[in-house]
Length: 205
Picture 1 (cartoon, rainbow, N blue to C red):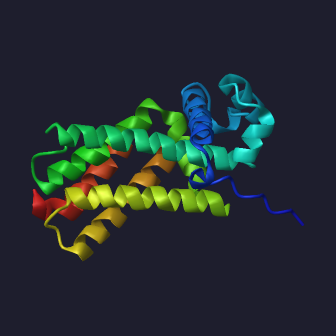
Picture 2: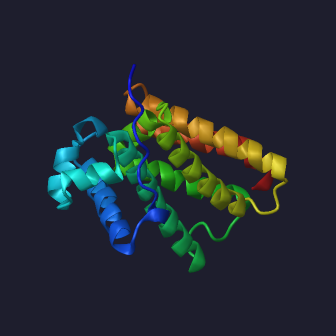
Picture 3: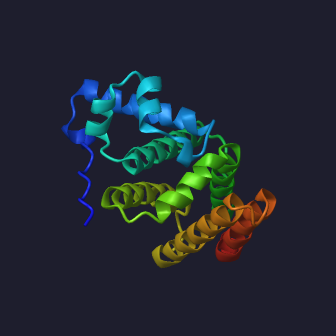
């Protein structure tokens, strides 16, 4: 019987210096994913490239999947912050109809995966994980993303907004699976997401 893996340290229980070290680890993994797929990420190399001792790395993230999940969440935060900054300054995603705003959001998310295909592969891998920490990390990220999405759908009835989020999100994940496994090209993956967005939010154009 496999022994359960300990849960990673919570950032809430860390000192400022520990949180900075943790962020440095996830930043290092983000940089590495620009070069290699999830399978190519090795804990020892993360330690060497980040300058964080291997023992310390394992105290922060007892399993590689924990580190990858935290890094994926950090990458998502970077994208979300960029969107928030653009909206705050009246850039794209700030004006237009509900349909226009949601299309812009998902189009930019898909194009971020196009620029970083290894993040698409990691997304698919993490979505099938049965590790409790990975599941919780993805759930927290999804909750934050839904909050941002519902803000863009201001004025849409709550149940309609929920169904739109579910439909578009499911289509996006399916499209990432098909694209990352070479079964469809990126233009088709993007079109799938955009078509479903128009289908479920066409009344709000």
